[in-house]
Image 1 (cartoon, protein in one colour):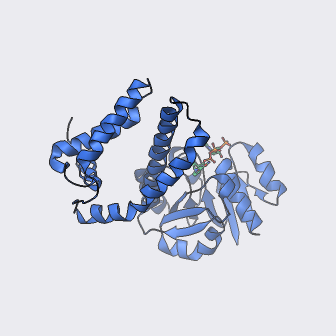
Image 2 (cartoon, protein in one colour):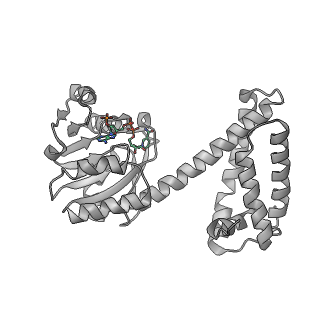
Image 3 (cartoon, rainbow, N blue to C red):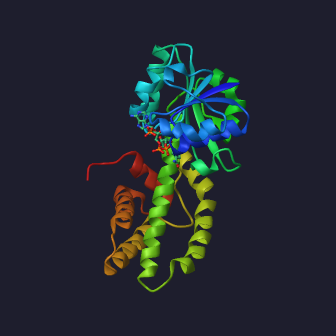
Length: 282
Ligand SMILES: NC(=O)c1ccc[n+]([C@@H]2O[C@H](COP(=O)([O-])OP(=O)(O)OC[C@H]3O[C@@H](n4cnc5c(N)ncnc54)[C@H](OP(=O)(O)O)[C@@H]3O)[C@@H](O)[C@H]2O)c1
């Protein structure tokens, strides 16, 4: 099985390394030739130009805009797996470009850091050509657990951004919490176990929230939007009293306050999704 990896940044190098470790014949190309040295020392064949790529072509560049001139070098008949991150619209536009140029296209996202690629925790999501994914599934499993989401090439990016959104807001909330307790003299390491246990509680609620969002039934016997909006007002006040940046808690408070204003005060927290889905001018 021949493979070509185009783009040898941190992630592209990890992808090429995982393919090499699995014993595949790998050709590599990178804009800056110096990054070719490491995979070449492990047996990869350097390519002078993306147009020389053979076999399954895997790309991983910074952005879809950076990637497009590289894709323009690929011959018709190529099967391409793009692991470059971007927006769903960029992924779909790339699928259209590929189709217009006789390229079979699979879009993918890597839900892992480069160091985890090829290891047990790595997961990748794919969308686009089902036939190409099925044909190359085994080689793609080399990188990590591979899940095909469907023919829409934008679906991997949708999932990627949705998951990253959870990560960023959770981490921002955690950092806000460390600053808040830090102001009271609590060391970050003292607080971390409380945060981890609390996230377990939050995680346990995910299926219940998913059911409520799917059904639109936001009744609750547990905790109302009114109650949480009052708590958020306390959090914002405490953050301001300490002179901390209030951007994150104030944004969440605003969301809950708008849910109250829209009549969801007696509903469960899941009802906030209705405000997110149908924002009104503020
Ligand atoms: N690193 C991560 O943790 C991670 C995790 C998941 C997904 N990703 C995604 O993987 C992709 C690559 O990330 P990375 O971490 O490998 O980034 P990186 O280390 O900064 O590497 C960027 C790569 O893109 C190439 N490149 C940038 N602009 C180019 C251009 N105009 N023409 C040709 N090549 C160009 C670079 O070539 P040069 O070497 O010549 O600059 C390099 O090979 C991104 O879309 C990123 O979001 C990364």
